[in-house]
Every structure is written in structure tokens, then in C-alpha cells.
Image (cartoon, rainbow, N blue to C red; front, side, top):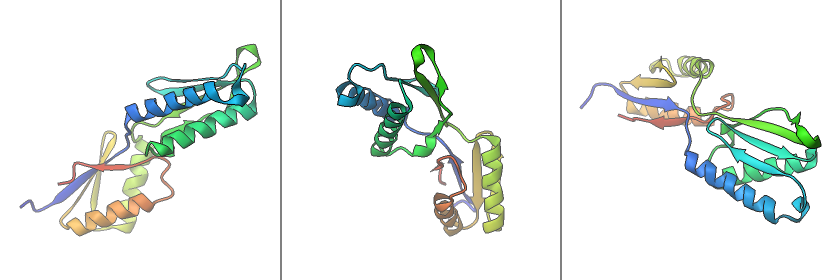
Length: 164
């Protein structure tokens, strides 16, 4: 048996589930009465989601639909970083929602800082877009997972992979 146990902290999501959620929103836009005869659309790219709506009320309705569908598909709403709406062509509003696919350096540093403060026996190292956590005790690792799942200061969803 290995003397040290470890796992990786990453931030990713199932792109197919997000695609399904966006498709459900598209279908709902087509069937809802308040969107009849209105130019409103939502498109998914690799890096972001673009919402186009005629006014703030309809834009908010599409945002709410998207959040509901994302949650229903068991995805974290933290994967969506909504930017400020801007004016687009034809007197419409356009909002770009950035998708958070990986941990950035700032978040990795924040995670390692939290672990150093709360768990001095645990060693955390940054490896690109992941944080590797190692310890001699598996119980310590499980406490780290529980603590990070409850951590409110993290603005991105975290997943725990490669548990050994």
C-alpha cells in the first residue's frame, strides 16, 4: 500500500449536458407565449453562451431559464460567468456568458491558501490548472474534500479526481 494518498482538484463539466440545457432553452423560447414574434435567441460556443433579447425583461427570462435548465441537468451554476448586457444591432440586447472550464492561477492559489490555513498536515501543489493534494492520512483528504465543497469563497465549481 502506498505511503501517501492523493487526489486532484479540477474544475470541469459535462459539455454535452450544457448543450442539452441550451437546446431545452431554445425549445422553450419557441413555445413560450411571451416570446411570440420576438427576436430572441441563445447560442452555445466552445468558450461562451450568447443571449440576444429585445429588452431587459426578456433577457432576464432567458437567463432564468438557462440557470434552471443547468441546475436540472446537475451542473453547477458557477460554470456560468455572466457579463453585463450590451446594445446590439436592431435595438436588441446581447449578453455574453463566459464558461468556466478550468481553474485559473488565482483560484489555484486561493485553494492552496485555504488548505494551508485549515489543514497543516496536507500538502497542496499547483500543477497547471489542477491542484494536487497529498497526505499520509486518507481521513485528512476526505476532510479536505468536505471542507472545499462547503467553501463559499470559491467562485468556481470544483471536482475531485484521481483519488489514490
